[in-house]
Image (cartoon, rainbow, N blue to C red; front, side, top):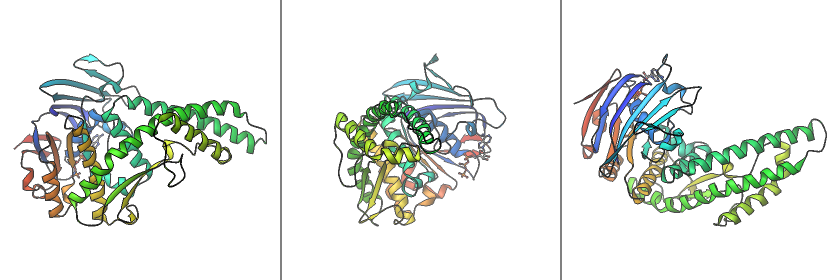
Length: 377
Ligand SMILES: Nc1ncnc2c1ncn2[C@@H]1O[C@H](COP(=O)(O)OP(=O)(O)OP(=O)(O)O)[C@@H](O)[C@H]1O
């Protein structure tokens, strides 16, 4: 698939912009702060309804404007679809698909698939487990849009259960009264059921990713390795492994919650479930986090994204690959290897402050970005 048109109104620094894109490589070059990342961020937003830089929509709307509009035309197998998104901070966003109102913005998920790699992705290796969980869940949603509902159901149940634990904890420790645990047990069940679905999907995904991450890392650098990711679940003791089927995963979650009951009541939060899990990234005989060099960490983070790309490609259609500001961080050998790996993707969008940073293997259309205006060269 590829994006053939991108139109923005009041998105980030763009009052208005209209961009025509072709399959193959497109490179956006411009000095710092001119609006290159804003463009690819908008394309990423159409795919994920989120930004790779910020967690709320407010900064995405041009300062002083009431709303932002992002419109993208996506071409897949010679058929095109137009997605319109209206971002209304503080109010519900609105979506249209081919001019018709979509029930929920979430209905646009799956129309455009992107894999975006940016300097922020270093946090996949160096950052908190939440970064890696989000990577897995975003990929699950990209492959199976229904997973957006599974994830939000889980978040809702978790919120409710945390509220109950908090009030039970306050009854026990502040008011010195016995808490009513029967309602909590009902929410244990809800959490186990919703959690098992998310957990099963993540476990299966990591199995598919593992060989691809190893191969991507080995293809990028000879330093360190092998790169081997493992899913670590709060529902199983270290090394114990987890059942694969959902009913038994739900049982494992129930058992782990029963075991953690006293601690959960003391702390007033849920300590078991997919929201406490991690994707452990092993590099050779050490964990990448805390041990890998800067270059190795970059290669690992990039390998996660390349593996995501390969997986989506194996599902039958290339996602749009976005490389935001990445070449400046890589040495010339890794630049070349990365370029070799991605140049045959159906559409690759690259941003760079300095044109010389782009390896010559990634030759393609060039756009100059200056003060929020984009011009083909
Ligand atoms: N909501 C907003 N309203 C107006 N301007 C904004 C908004 N958000 C960001 N900007 C401006 O957009 C510009 C940043 O654009 P962007 O991040 O795309 O830069 P870039 O060309 O990728 O730069 P770099 O090479 O430094 O990464 C900044 O000047 C910033 O002030």
